[in-house]
Amino acid sequence: MSVFQPHIVAAPNEHKIPFPVHVSLSKVQFCREYGSRMLAASGWDGTVHIYCLGNNGHSEEKRFYYHGKPVLAFTFAPSFLGWEQNRERGSRPGSHAGGIRCMEYNAEGGIIVSGGWDATVKLWDARATTVAGPMQSVSSGERVYALDVLGNKIVVGTSDRLVRSDSRGIILRLDCFQYQTRNTAFFPSGDAFVVSSIEGRVAIEYVDLSPEEQKKKYAFKCHRSKEDGVECIYPVNALAFHPINGTFATGGSDAVVNLWDPFNRKRLVQLHRFQTSIVSLSFNFDGSQLAIASSFGFEFEPAPNPMPENTVTVRHISDAESKPK
Image (cartoon, rainbow, N blue to C red):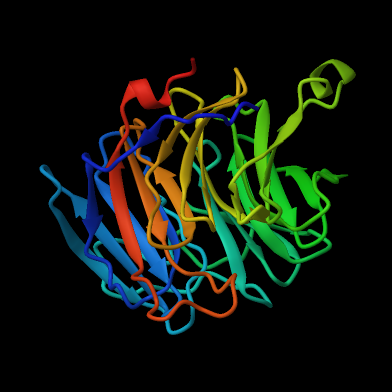
């Protein structure tokens, strides 16, 4: 993967969402329904904020939900018992024995998939009208750190390995990195997925285990810099695929966002450096906007003083920046 002389882009087409600057961010996500302008952000203070993005950089907070414990995961679904946009209160369809680290919605199957620190992956019926518990619960062997779902496939990153599973509960184990998996995401085509780690690496893996397909997989180094002759390696915390073009964005603890072309194995764009670590990324339904959550994750000691502000930034992404080249 070529990373030399990136096209570094400043910030003429971005604006900040009015998220509380003192709250550490955990996740940001666009609603992926066609035409939707909804964006949600969660924090370690137990809150979820839902915004409606308007024109000319204006955004309005529509809902505020206090959970009581740090919110590490959430997802948009058309209707679910957990909480709905037009309801003031939520209900509790079920739980994990440990903290819930990941949650994603699969529109094709109408299910929500959650993964937790109790080493389980659970599937929930998003169309259920009564509390019936999970449709399925699968052991992941270790704590779940990353998860994505597409069609009948689920990819799960655990504390010591990568686990792949489909809706039938078939599990295959695969070692991608020497160090901890940080995030994972499916290609929009579903034939491959990308995995990131704390060691400043990203791997492209293919679902089909045939030798022909496995020859296509590769990994590359990123989110690294040299300071006084010493190489600094940063965790790659965030991944997000452009839903139309099939390119993807990475965000790291170096406070940088990169856009990559996985087909031609090169970097397309590097955005300007943010104040602190990038913890989450999300494209909207057509890929024209990228939400960027920047928040210090206590990866470094000592912590900066004063602490940098926590921000949610929405940036316009053009085809020139996101199409394969």
